[in-house]
Length: 346
Image (cartoon, rainbow, N blue to C red; front, side, top):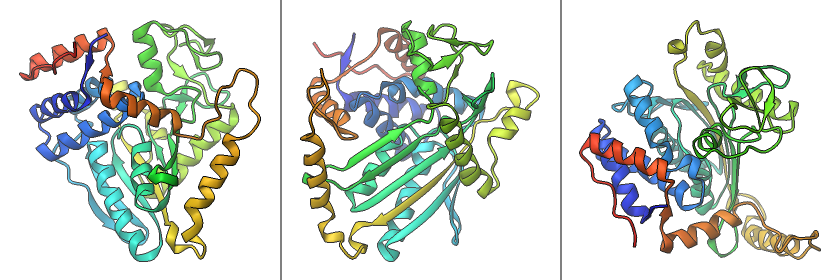
């Protein structure tokens, strides 16, 4: 597989997005979001997602000229106006961090954003600035609702982070489906076998064949779809931008416009009475968990984010390996935009 430097890849991504109308700053922001995912081994949300963003721009689902703005103060709502998701989330996190510095805690809603990449990057940013952070996203119905034979619920995601010892936050990031829709799409391209009970075909039958699979299944059955429903209720209906029902009632696929909403909660650790000792308590709990007796065949017990951090450290020097099919697609995209692919490492 071609291996390239992640910063060179990000420059390529930014140049392509600029050619499609994003400003220099916005293109760099989206490129950095994809780079964050690629460096941590989340290939489904890395540069492989660039073709989808370009399709969304062409379809008018992403407004390259939109400027996210503060639309309401209490509750705090950011109107994204269908801006590129990473641009909207960067604005929202700036506003949330500004609020939490003054008040100790804050809750914020983001209305009408678009796909923003891996959500772990945003809560990690807040944790690095001394906050407990949680966010969830309500988006189009890509996952089956428990008991239904078609997609009728968002896949989430839910992300949480807290400051950790040695300046490294503990970061948890998950979809409420057994596999994300992006991972399903990637498995289809690679011809991979899916995990058991992860997806179903067009007839509503569970399948492990990525070529036949069309709809991810909720994790833990009713629990996963219940969480997805609450995301829609709390993040979408609360800001009068329903997503799921308009998609389900749409007469044709062309009527199903992409939009998302998000809810962000932050609390400054040092605002708590015992906040000064928080990181040391995290260290103590980490050491206790890592020291537990290991199940047979387990070499090490991990906390959330450990594997991704190790991957990021390795890829910072080794580069990013790109699937040949994805590399070919990027080449075609670059050629159409007049942008050269980054050099392949020897």
